[in-house]
Image: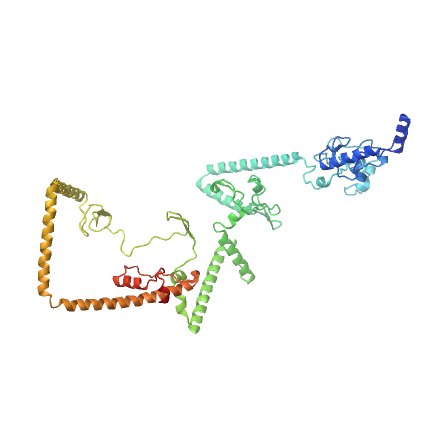
Length: 575
């Protein structure tokens, strides 16, 4: 168990015993119990953990045989140093970024042979067996001439795992700066040379200018091999195509979006297929790079890839054709192949139909019209407008649209007044009438004003207030007139139809009974149909979309009342 005891060496124990002049006392039972309680409290977290000599906490759950140092370690306090790697056993590695001079030492070269130098070249930095120069017929030791300069001795560096694999370790940035300056000087010289040629060509006459242009075209043809295609570098000597995947001035793909959860970048092929700004708030139209797949599936890239596959297939079948070398030949060949494929399909289809028949099934209506349903998803709002999905096309009328006849500038039906249609350009309500323009509008307004005045005058006459007595007398007179008319009608009917009234009443009663019987039969059939439908599952019941909505007749209402089952009647179960 982990305790605070320290395993001291015997010499230290003896020295302490001499200084105290007493034998070391054993731990009492009480002290041992207190130490155990402190240990349990440390494990439970109620007491602070034990500290080592450097002030760091020691885990109380570490066993004693691990925590207690051996006596020969020489620890005088609680520590875990003996469990860690000892500093004298650690390897010392060279630091990264140390630059050492390499190559030949600049300055004066030796003029006579020095003792200990290379016998072949005369340099002091290596021996004859390590010399990389071609073996001379007479060495520098014996010839005394043409001594090689000394070299910088690079020390042997001990690097760790990452240091051995660091490709830029020991690289001098000044080398790149020197190369860039040299390239800039060459480009500047080319630019000035080109400007001088242009100035010289402008000063010559027209004939000389034509000759100069011819010479320029010849030069361009001569150096055409040195021109790199976009995205490629073609070396004429080696005949090897090397991909220049990125111009050095452009931004690297993985630097557009530094979020590690954005589009995946493949360092081996230097490709980023997805859009790095896909889940960002940036406008996609302003983004410079939207992924490699955008280039592969935009424009004529898909058609270009099809042509390339067709060229490969044609080459394998024995036709010598190339996409870049013979694009016109390839296009004509692909069209011819497609045409032959179509003719072969049509002939095969016609032969099968002629042999087995069934052409009428190919000319059938589409499923959307036959089944009155489609799988096109359309989402509507609560107001009936389409939010998502395919919108229905505008329904075209079978009549001619936007036809202006008789000098009209608007169609018939563009104007509405008092329940009548008309022309908006002249407010005419007569169809096929000649357009009168603004004069017709003024005439219609005048007619409207006259009609309004007449109506206002008649309303004033009608709205003369009458007394209650006059109104009561008018009502009594109207009632007397109605009574007199009814009496006269009854007298006439009694004289004329006294003989025929009995037969007509009998016919009417027979007709009512016949209609009532028919209505009862219909009601019984309807009740049977309802009982049959109620027994079927709700999901399998047919729709009743062709039901005609019409008001029921008196006979149908009487049949429904007779057939209606009254649950409150106790004798209804015995019928």
